[in-house]
Length: 297
Image (cartoon, rainbow, N blue to C red):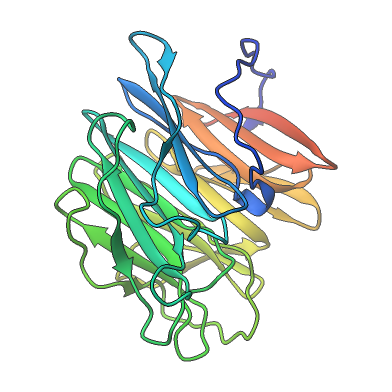
């Protein structure tokens, strides 16, 4: 994997203004794209989530639509969105409704983000609350929807995955990821990520203590390296991973050596063909680098 020339972009365009926007530690606006629509979700400090939808045929953005049907319950600000085609989008977030304890709640839109379903409690921890300060991740394709989150059970803060096979209408019981456990009395603020392979297989990446792992549901975890804030993107034939350690951003895929791309933290990553784009935070600025994947042997 070698560095390529910096990608070029059109001039930024304003979508909307959300007063008291929450943006720290990956709480900021989330983006999902399908052939027909682009949907952005964002949360304010009051704990309300709003969706903005772009019809790609008309290039027109919709007005803000509130996603949560109980006001001011997404106080932690962690929320995620994914699109699965034909105007279908799914959202999930940390939610305080009913008992003021964080649980996983979700909603779906079948018209490209312009209206949202009645909210559904996807998971409620039997120990009272899920991990309060770790982001939720979503991946969807056709009728399969996967929600990844850090749980808090028996004093352990381990990653769990929930799967729906009917487009988010119902979900199977949560499944713990990996065979190890992390006993912790504090929140690590590190939620990992889940993506789907070309075949629809969920691939997860996450942190336990100072170690980073990837695994398939039901299989032992595979150690990658040490670090934090790991994320991943689905490539054409291989997932691509990014994380930070010691103030440095690192990128790696199965067929490529680990590449140091810059100084900073909180990377996000995307893959288009053989091009990998990584963006991250560094001293109050958003930085970017692109690399080229080598074909897998």
